[in-house]
Each structure stands twice: as structure tokens, then as C-alpha cells.
Length: 307
Image (tube, rainbow, N blue to C red; front, side, top):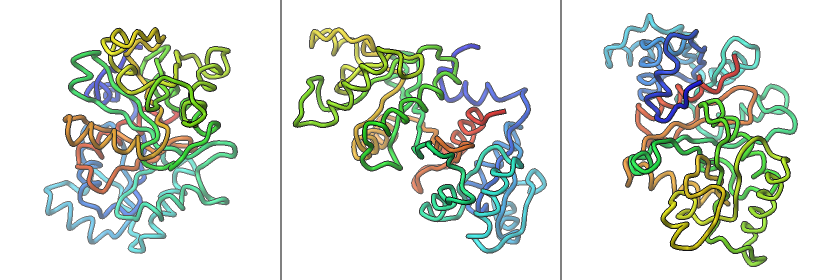
């Protein structure tokens, strides 16, 4: 398949193929509703809204949306609406779960529920974001896959391996046969005073020995040498990633969250994000994310859903 190099190309790749089924937990959320309506109108998704029917229909009228493009399941209780949406995914009636007007903590509890949740044994729940940043597009003409910016505060070594594996899987679904992955730290020196550098060096060695999917992996790497060939040349660093990473794995949530918010709010980046490691993609965006980010996140979920 051709490489998907932009988020617009991601959306285009979904046109003309059978649409995925989306279940929205508590669908009476204006931004989520508008994003879901756009996905339904463009026929990239079949959308079921589980929530308060009267409120959903009122929002449709307010935003000039034809409510007939949705399947609406009347469930005024937010917790029950969330559980029913999750169960649709669990039972194979939907391919992607999406957060509507339900608190993130409640949404995550539904996914992590030991008896009815969506996290297979042995998997790690992590957040995967795909960023379309103008400056990176100008330099490299491609997207960045990053993890974790929203869920795992302080991932240990085995968790970072899982995060990397999921990102490789996602990148390959975009047509990137052998993605380049950088394990981000403050610098390129391995030091016991900076545990993240030890993790990065171990994971890079594991990848070298074929213990991690088919990818080019290096670390520890500072951000500049991960994304800039010029920085590699100036520092005299010979890295197989070559300053052209497809994937960035961050040492903790602070680093990842600051990066993604700087990329979107300061650098004009566009974002799609899902919770991954689950049996099906689960759309999770920030409360401050706009309708477009939610729409692009639906597209990402549809792309990653197993058909």
C-alpha cells in the first residue's frame, strides 16, 4: 500500500472501503456529535450514539445535523450509556469506542473493567497519537507517531517495549514498512543518574537483536537528533534513525504531554489520538481538543480497527 503521509491522506484512505462501526459513549456532547456527524456524512463510519435522545436530537437541530445519519440508543444515564457502548464493542457490534459526554476517569474504568473491559490479558493500556506538524512535513514529508502523552505517568522498561510495539503496528498500518523509532531522553549519553537512558539503551539493543518488531530503533536520543539530520551532523552522532524518526517514545507523561501540546498549540500541528493495546481502538481526546481533532481521531480509530 502507499504510505499515508498526512492526516488528510488518512481520511482519504478510508473512503471507498466498508465503513467501521463507532459506538459513542454518552453521545450528547457537542464536539463529539459534530465530529461523528462529519464521519458519518463522509461515509467513513457508521455511528451509534448511546445517550439522552432528547438532548442529542436538540443538538442536531442546533448544529443543523440530520439525526437520521445516526443510530440513536436512548440511555439518559451516562454511566449506563458508557457501559452499553463498551459492550457493543466487546460483543462485536462495533469496531471502535468513542468518548462522548462521560468523564475520562469513568471512560477508562469501563475499558479497564476486569470482567467486562476491553484490555486483553498481558496488554498495556496506552495512548497513541499521530501528529501532522507543518515544520516536520516541510522537512520530512511525513507524520509522527508518539506515545505516551495522556495515560501512563511513568512507564517502566516493559511498558515502553509495549508502547513501542503498538506504535510500530500503527505505523505499519499506514504503509511504513520499517518505521524509525527514537527513544527520547534529555541527551544521548547512557547514565545511571538518568534511568530513562538505561531503558532506552536496553530497548535499542533488544531491537538490534530482533526482539522487537521490524523497525529501526535507537536510543537514548534527545529530541533534536531524533528529528533533525542537521543536529546529528553538528553533534557528530551516527544514529540509524538519522534524524528522521517516524515514532517518538517518551520517558514519561510530562515529556510527552508537553511535546504534543507544544506541537499543536504553538507549531500548528494537527492531532489524532486513541487509546491502544485494547481489543479495539478507543477514541480519547483532550477536553480542549476541537471538533477536527475528534474527527481525525475517529479516522485513526477506523484505520486501526481490525477488520
